[in-house]
Image (cartoon, rainbow, N blue to C red; front, top):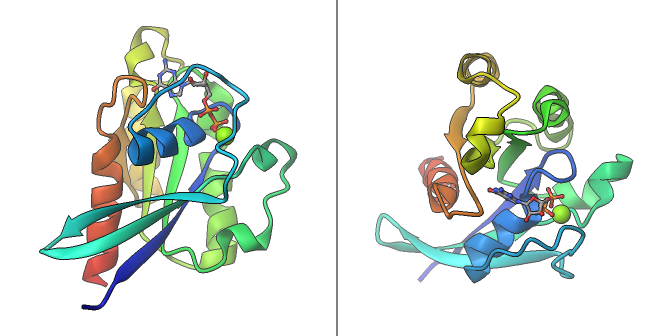
Length: 168
Ligand code: GDP
Ligand code: MG
């Protein structure tokens, strides 16, 4: 049995919900505790794609993103990427293009998804549906809207990426 493992990097400005997404997906929990890091380099979860076991390793940035100090080691060997912004944080949306460029500089072209998180706060949205869809189209990425808090669409993000990687 060949084991398939996929390293997924999750980038985006601080506060958009990256660590929460990893905890939600790998541990099934959600906490409001903002500065808490998961204290390890990555968490993993095993799923089945086309009848095969795939180990998905999710790498967290542990806060370095705020200082623009993510090292090359973080990106090394990444096979898929999640570009994350928050529904209630305009700067995080505007930064998506830059995050994509950074990942591309280190990893070339890998399957990538844009995640609009905190969709439970849609009433407080600072982005329009239109501009989000336009950005996704321009960057040629699948867009998935999630609420890590309410566990909406989180699993679809990683299932989509794992399927893409598996097809390569
Ligand atoms: P990171 O800096 O990108 O790792 O973001 P965190 O995972 O630390 O999350 C930042 C804050 O947003 C925390 O208070 C989380 O509880 C909160 N948060 C994360 N996801 C959601 C969500 O889907 N909805 C809401 N309302 N809050 C969220
Ligand atoms: Mg974090």
